[in-house]
Every structure is written in structure tokens, then in C-alpha cells.
Length: 139
Image (cartoon, rainbow, N blue to C red; front, top):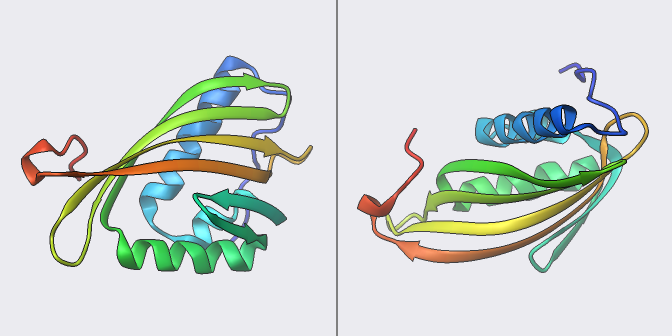
């Protein structure tokens, strides 16, 4: 898989929004290889209480995530941007293997290297059980 030419900092409102949309599209693909291309080879993450470093760990993390979070569907929204940083708020819905649906709410802070690849991602996320009829994001 080839790496697409990333949008590089410093960001404008338009390029920051495009970066957020590209991330949403990649994550909704549920393809760890595709998602990992947006991150620097030495990218560092905090996702909830888990710390991840590098593309190989990112791919492994995403495989575990999507094996548990079935029917995953995500919506991201640009919250703020400055220079090489972007903050987003997001919601995603998923169900576990028993069929219980959840809506996960969170915020992410992103920091990009000069090549436009994400070098750092800090994510805080909360999960709320929902009924299937309460879902907002249907495939």
C-alpha cells in the first residue's frame, strides 16, 4: 500500500477540516493498514489508559479494537487547530459480541510532524450503553 501525500502543517480551517475528514474516512474503513499510513513510523498514542508507539503497535491496537467493537461507525468534528496541532471531538457507535450497543464520546489532540503525519495522538473516551433504536450512525 502506498502512502498518500498528506496535508501538511501549518493548518488553515480548510486543511484542518480536510485532515479530520480524511481521518474519519480512514477509521471508518476499519482497515488497520490504511489507518496506520496517517501516522509517523514513531507515532505515540495515549488511547484511554493504553499507550501505543509506532505503526506496528498501532496496527495491532486497531486489530484488537475492531475485533471487540463490532459494527463500528465514527463521526469526527474539528474542534480547534493551530500550527501543527488539531483537536477533534468525536462519537462512534459499536456493539459487542452479545449485541449490546454503545456510543463512545471523546476528544483527541493531534500533533503532526512537518511531513503531515501524526506524531502524537492523545484520546480520552467514555462509553455509554444505548439501545439499538437510539443509534445515530447506521451504515
